[in-house]
Image (cartoon, rainbow, N blue to C red; front, side, top):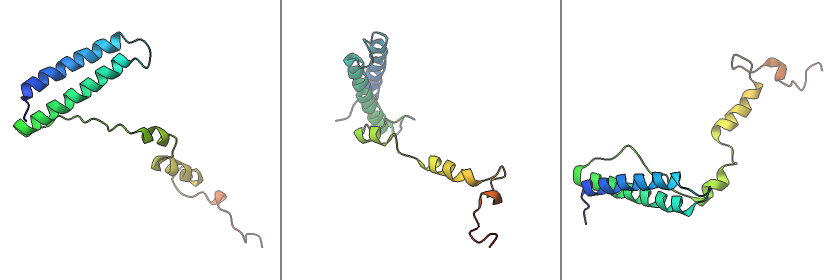
Length: 109
């Protein structure tokens, strides 16, 4: 079943308006009305993007991030940049290993 892209766009705009109204009227950080409006907005976007692609072979420049409960647990993990920063501690201002930081086990022996 194909969806008319124009109708899908109208639904997306209405979902954006409803989401904004829910945010303005929210009753705390975990307001279920805002959560519901978020879900409706995400669904409307997907329908519009799919309809646009099916009918016209085009896409929007947006994507929806996949929700994954495991992502919350990974927030404390180090990423590659964090590891690189730790390795830089032994470098001088020119990005070279500082000879003073090197340990020579047989120095002075």
